[in-house]
Amino acid sequence: MAEFKFEIVEKIGVLGEKENGWTKELNLVSYNDYPAKYDIREWDPDHQKMSKGITLSKEELLQLKELLKDIK
Image: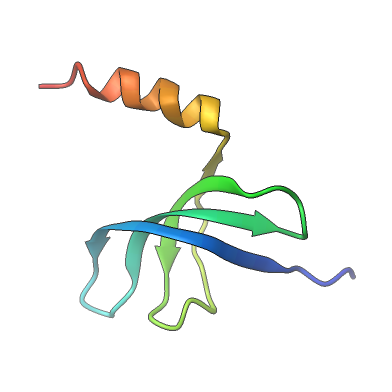
C-alpha cells in the first residue's frame, strides 16, 4: 500500500472546536504531492490525525463564497 502524505501549506482559520480538542478548519492542503487545494475538515490538536472532509479548488471556493453571501 502506498504511503499517504499531506502537508498543510497554509492555515486559514478555525471554524469551531470540540471538547476533545479537535478543530474544524479551513486550510490549504497538499495531498500526496499534488497541488494544494482548499480543505475543510476536523484535525486533532497535533494535526497528525484528520476526519473525513471536503477539498475545493480555488474556483469552487469562490463559488461557495458567492452562495454563502446570500444566506441570512
